[in-house]
Image (tube, rainbow, N blue to C red; front, top):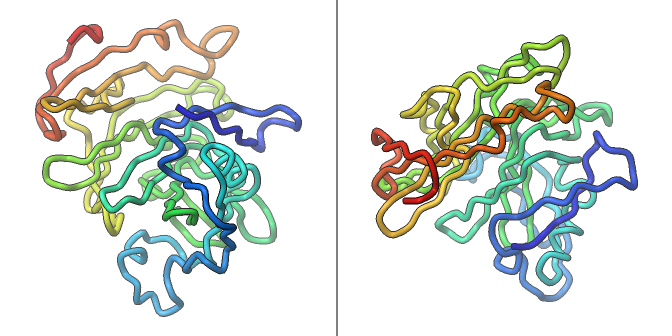
Length: 279
């Protein structure tokens, strides 16, 4: 594990939030000579001809921000400012892709928008290719929207936070999503999950192939975290009631994690639910 310190616009300096990255940072950024943004190719060219990235539905972008340093220091430096327009975000998760790239999933991302403003979108991703980072979101660069399920989102009222992910047996990338509803008077006043969704993507182009209800589609959020061994894939569940429940915001249920399992990579299968992690 490595810890990366990232500033979030909701916190005033010098408060910092420590975030644990799920895989070793040394696998993400290797020591080497200084790399500049000029060494990072644009995500797509102006004609849109490079369709594997064009399929991201992201706007044409300038060259990604580059970083070169050892281990966690490089990642901390990369995310300390603006990573290709990402100003801050919560709940970073890394997804190793089969071609060696890394997909960073984030929720409640603040991204640069028109006129130098900052826009809150409920989910986004950062695609890391070696030392280069490219922000992925829906909408346009001037008016960004959520990367996944943006068409179903009503900002601050109904939205989708990314959860765990895994490569399925059919070769697709599956990302679980929590559908969240605000039931209070303002954003994050009394926020509850109401359903679990699954996004199906091509892991090479990152084209969205399908967005559908997860096999266990209820608010238990099986898919909150995902892990596999040689025989099974384990879908962990947590109630995700973080805001508006008691003095510190969290409901007591946040301390309870349940787990289910399916045959390895069979993420469309009916899950076998177990109460605890003693599998």
